Length: 208
Ligand code: C5P
Image (cartoon, rainbow, N blue to C red):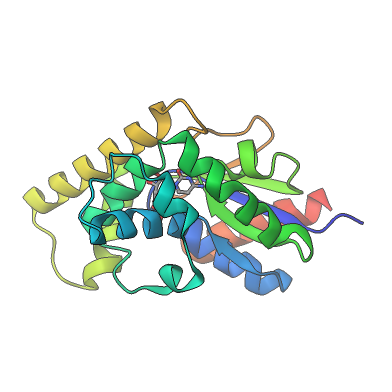
């Protein structure tokens, strides 16, 4: 019996993490947020006074577990820095084995951009989670600022940040953000987290 591996890919703030955590809880599997790996490499670059667009393979090779639990990984400069280090083949290569070994023995729910295409091409079930840039920018705002109101100008800026990150993630040469041909796509604009979970879980059950 192969371990159960559930791949959850998609653009920024589409609801991947929320779904992946709920599925991990439901199936009693560990959850791996692979974005954190790229964020931690970007954080190390910034803390060393280096531009994340420069060669980040040295910092990627030095990642430690404590780098992944820092509280300053979800800030705008790291959003941007992560997608810059993630475009570097040597960085992706350095992080690949770490992601595979995490799930090898127990199975896992893994979220990211290239999980179904590159990291676990043989995953048991693959999802591609999407939503419009507007819906994703609004969700990201509420995650960061709870109930604070959002002006039209702030929304426009958030949409622009999310879109430029998606463009960079989708257009890079190595492991770009892409839907695997055998992934199930769920569009989350008009769905609650519970509804996304229900849809995804029904698909998993039908695949087993
Ligand atoms: O998912 P999250 O927004 O935390 O990811 C941060 C960045 O890390 C993404 O914008 C992307 O550039 C990169 N990433 C990636 N491959 C993954 C996960 C994240 O390239 N599997």
